[in-house]
Image (cartoon, rainbow, N blue to C red; front, side):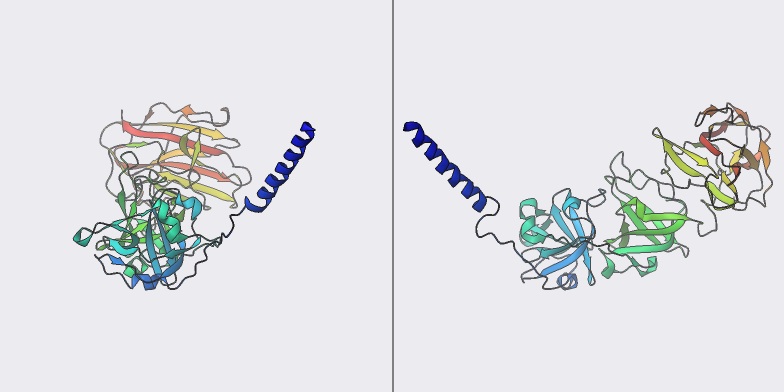
Length: 441
């Protein structure tokens, strides 16, 4: 009898427990997600702003906009930048990993009441505040309070940048996504790292158009792409327009939004290398990006036949350059990678490494010219230099050291050119070079 009582009691408790789980565990009673709707635009918010002041939003202003920048690559820190058709605003949030919850293109809502609109050296921002009176200071919205002001959605779509010219930079475009076409980094900025990642310092580089209008590109020392080098060609660049005091600046979201492989404004395929001669060359190509055409300061990368150029490749944490006609859509290929102008005031030597892959022909050779003008290969006089190099007897990607290649026959000023010829049908060998040094003997 006693055992029967215990069994009945357990059955009743089990039924009661399961009933509670089914009815109450998944969703607390009375819970209703908050629904917000925009009551104004970013332009309405910006109309409250006066430069150098802190203005509290006292109305029930709710804005919405699409995220155009977050902390995904580290170039923006503890902030989101959103824009709508009326303008853009930076929102300071005391949290990291924001890109996980608020990816680029996501539409979000922001309750502005109780927040302050101010600026950082002329760039509008929405934030919390600390202090009082003349000691007011902007602070990021504390992480626990973010859900009270910022509301996410599932609405995500790509934001198209506004195409403008450098001279069209205006205050009302600050905190918006823009695109420049036919621009290049100045000679003083090309081939320089985007930032100082060793010391984690931000760096300003100069971007110019063909009319020499200039805008600054600023990159944080914490940006994941900061160690990559600015390209030396001409093309397009997408970024978020910013302001610092009286200067306009551009901030990259991602280095992949820099596309500069066209000839520069002077017509060169690479940097114009007809400038001041150098005393020596020491190039290991480590500053280049994998699968991008080789662009180094004061070098030229020129296609004489076809449109293929020497290209950077990476293997086993080593970057080198190669040329190949494999799978080329053009019948013939001729590409030259040419050093800066070099002073041969004393006996010099060339040292390098070469390799080949899938060898079917000998398409690589080394030349020098004293009358190359920096851009036109075919109009110059070239003399071949005998070098020890990899060939068909070597295994794929097997490095061959050249040893000291005597350059004492060259005097005055001259260029060294690395030439590749091939064809899509029978001349498809891949030629590879690395660690090029032209130094005193």
